[in-house]
Image 1 (cartoon, rainbow, N blue to C red):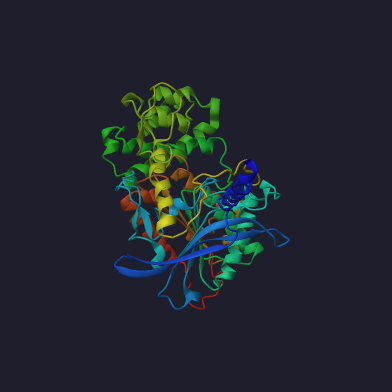
Image 2 (image 1 turned 60 degrees about the horizontal axis):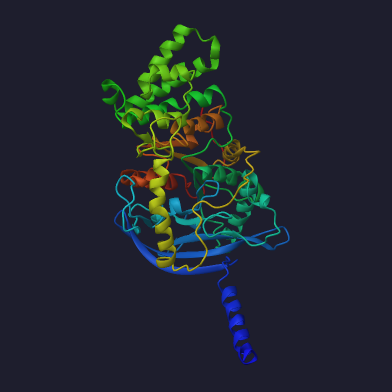
Length: 500
């Protein structure tokens, strides 16, 4: 009886093995799925082609060791690609996929969220009338182990990908290869990065220029990190006060006369000046600061921050951000968000030195993951069984040797065409706006680059584009930046005079 059923059993086992092999979750080293679409931007119909696909990362022997997922949008009613700008977009983490700016900022679709950025159901996407696709083609790139990107050669050390300089090295080669494949060497080129992505694109600007001889027109830093620029000690401790003032103002935790001031025109310039002129040198003096002066400064810091004078004295004038997010609204039974201080949370208890979770990031994860999985399958028609990693496994990450801020400055010195735009939300406590301004000062101590370093602030947080008003404003600023930084035809890349 058993012998009679052996062939059937063997066939079933073989079939099961085949199905299992077919269902193994692997990235295709090379793939491309093309779709077409259109979006109306500022009243103009913009037709485009979207290519969702993968392209290898090669080792020195020319063998594929990883494959990166990308989405490339090209406007299709443009004849001269040589004059058409192209923007390479990266998010941060490190370990974060490109979906954040892809589906909420510059791409042709944005999340289905309310005007302040809170998730709405059903989760999904809608056309983005503020996309920069009218003025530039855009490619959104997922670095290794983010999004759908994966390592394909298991013998390649993880250190090849996961570190400040390793990340820049392999991505520079990948971008160069993509530009060559797409025949875009003549096009004006821009990099945009958000959060840790600003570390990435700052280093990439230098690496592309000095290792691949690819010269850029612009770099856009969205909610930038410290870019490896030294600000230890008093500078870092003092620089948070303007952010505290903005957050307290939003939550109406300041004195009536401060609440009556306009945030950008009046309050923040006042607090910034006090920070630089008084708080920074006071903290630098440490224990030598006279008690009477310390008390006077603590009282003014309390006035600007919404905290009590006693709390500020207990922290020797240097209140950590983690404590601030817990303390500001403690008497209301609420916490405030790290990445966007407009968001409020509720902890299990009101006691403690830090909040239980970031209410901003928690709210955002509601909207992004379902939308990206829907968008890839239904709009881009890209079918895969791989998990889209919002936050992928990239640890341990080697943070040593981060000199990206000075590398960007050096790239600007070498390339008179290269401009930098920094965009920051006033309510971002993860990468605060005043430290973003400090980046410009530290990168350019002699003031020779100030005419090519531009700062824009917004009344929102880390992802300022989640707020409807700033989605428009921030895209308009990028659009204007691109238009202004394409030199006139035949204008030579040379210095005529240095700003003094």
